[in-house]
Length: 72
Image (cartoon, rainbow, N blue to C red; front, side, top):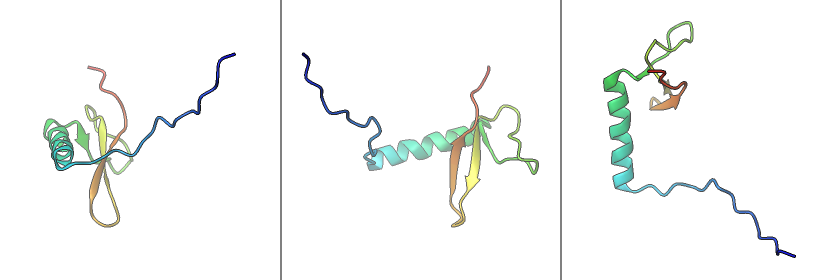
């Protein structure tokens, strides 16, 4: 009989380096420049062509949240 092994969680904390942080901020800036990231309208809708919503935190910082995939 085969011995069972302990299951390991697939989600692990990402190790962030300065290079990773720079790549992440560049990715976010590029999304905003191309119009793929936008703030929600007053009705709570994402503008056409945008795939990410810009979410403002109470402390004033912003983060991007993936809302839908591009169909083009």
